[in-house]
Length: 271
Image (cartoon, rainbow, N blue to C red; front, side, top):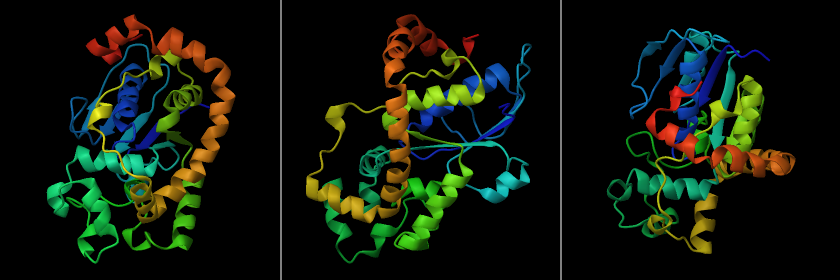
């Protein structure tokens, strides 16, 4: 399989930073044009040209935080390799809630108070903060209209479309296994899809939700829960398949202190 283009749809707090880091390294090593919506230390919005002397393959990368089929058609990337990532929805929402600090927007002092609002009468609970962050963040990023958030029929139809369109759906909980699949699909060395953890919270800063609170959030996030469950079942097979080799990968590559040192300096210095 010779990949010429990649479309990566990233949600928030779902390993998007790490995956973008990987794609930026691949772009630096192999690719020619990048159009990335990214406002951190990686790249800013716009088109970037890089001339790499020893290109093995030529292809484009589009990374965006919302599925835009018309844009992809316009860019001529309909046949690109489509990649996205998912994470257990309650954990993902709790992380996003604190990452962008939704308390003031929803008028609550904590996520526990927010959960109590879900069964209340406030319409604000379904309003997206800054038009970007809120309920069913994973499904929203992949293009599910908000009017379908409570429609099981439309949710199932939407997930079926994701299954048909996306070539790789990475699962945060099995991130390393997903990287192995990615490197095989792209036919690049394992070293070139490595990534160091970044933008990760310490455990003591995470809110601990009760079983009841988690259950309430799961029902409210029904579209994300169904989406995640469908692809998590598929990914469990990958976990089983890669289990025999993950130990050697983690010891020889992911835990290599020298490689981590190189990453901390500049990811794309790898050759």
